[in-house]
Length: 118
Image (cartoon, rainbow, N blue to C red; front, side):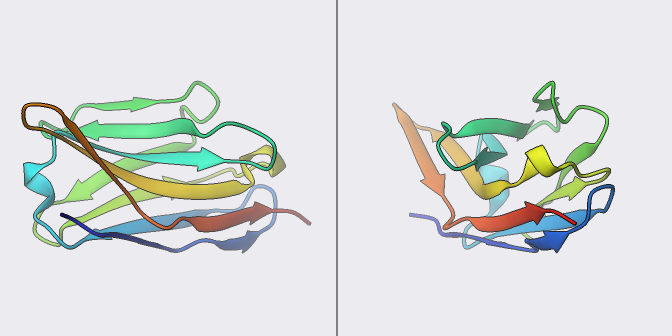
């Protein structure tokens, strides 16, 4: 079992920046992939950014060029740097970790609210 704890959310004006952190209770190097998802009111949860054990990244089209996912294995932490934030980025952001061992094991954090508004 692993626990994921997000932090760094808050209220920011359009055009501003935030950095989300996801601290894991286990060594993140064991996870095949880690990522950030978000869910806005009335919408389905969607993948924002992902990073593999090897460091490959992928992004949702809507955030490409504005968001950057990174990982620090020594700190067992994954980050999401969010720049040029827009009101449509408002959502609860969830950290995710996937582990493949005879089947998929998924771990989720409790979520952190990001609100982009004047």
